[in-house]
Image 1 (cartoon, rainbow, N blue to C red):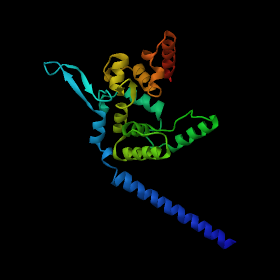
Image 2 (tube, helix red, strand yellow; image 1 turned 45 degrees about the horizontal axis):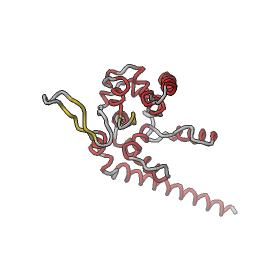
Image 3 (cartoon, rainbow, N blue to C red; image 1 turned 60 degrees about the vertical axis):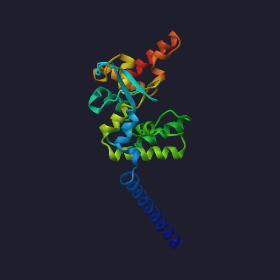
Image 4 (cartoon, rainbow, N blue to C red; image 1 turned 30 degrees about the vertical axis):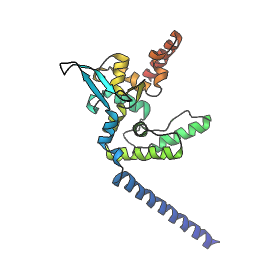
Length: 239
C-alpha cells in the first residue's frame, strides 16, 4: 500500500511538472516568440485609425471625417486626461498596474459572487482583457473564445507598456451609434476636446463605459427615462 501511494505521489508530481513545463513553453512560444502579426502596433493602429479627415478648400480647417465602421478621434496617451485614466482604473480594474493581463484574485471573487447570486453580477475581466476583446473581436462566450481573449491579453501585456494599453482602450470603448473612444465621447457629451475635460466630466465618461446606453440621456425616448438616466449617471459619476 505504501509503495502504491508513493508511486501515485511521484506520478502526480511528474504530471504537475510536465504541465508547468508545457505552460511555460506555450507562453514562450505563443506570447513571446510568435505572438502573430495582429499584435503589432501597426496592425492595432490600423484598427483604431480607420478614418480620413475632410477639410475645407483651404486644406487646414477640418469639416469632419469619413469612416467605415466606427468613428474615432484618435488620442495618444499624452492627450488623455489623468482624471480619465485614474477614473477608469478605479472603476474597471484597480489592480491594473500590478497584474500581467489577468487578475486571478479578481476573477476568483467574481466567480464566487456569481455562484452565490446564481447569475452574472460581477465581471472578472481586466482592462487588458477588455482591450483584447474590443480590438480582436471576440466571437461569443465559449471557452475557446475566452482562451483566445486571454492569449491576446497576455500578448498585449508582454509587448506593450501599461500606458500604451490604456491608450488602446481609451480609443476603442463604445460611446453611442458608430462612436468609439474618449475623443468622440468628449465631443458627444460635452462638445469639448478630451484635453479640456474637467474631473467630473472625465469621471462621467469613465463611469458610463460599463453600461453606455443605460447612462446616456440623449438616446432616451421619454422625459421619465431621461431623468432616470441623469440620476443614475450622477450616482455612477460620484462613485
